[in-house]
Length: 188
Image (cartoon, rainbow, N blue to C red):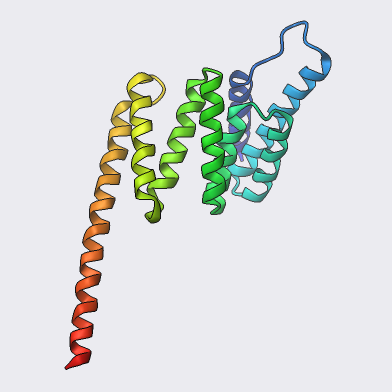
């Protein structure tokens, strides 16, 4: 339980650091909205850390409704959706995160969004071409933002994808040979 308290404090400090704070002269409603957004992020991340993806997803959607142009909420929602098995929703959230982060020159969340897209697609056997494009985008990002995402990690993801594609091809060949042998045995 102690780690949960530490996680909550860390999330609070990270969320506060990542989200823009209104200027001193900002209206009270804008300050309340920012505070509510951060509070909802904290609650959602705590739920996610304890494995309650349903609560995390719902709370993250509430946070996003409060501040839809903030990339972090979309990245966290992508993570929650991926954990719950909603890969289409996760892809949409990670792509939105990367796009919003790019618009706000938020390299940290842009990298998180690009990585999320790549991870989801690499695991989807039906989207190998899209996975290659996503990993290439992550590689380009890592080349220009090495302090945010190390190039070596992006290269390792590329190597892993290449290995997966090669194994897919070998598996398909083996499956075809087995089917041909079974058909030949059935004829005999």
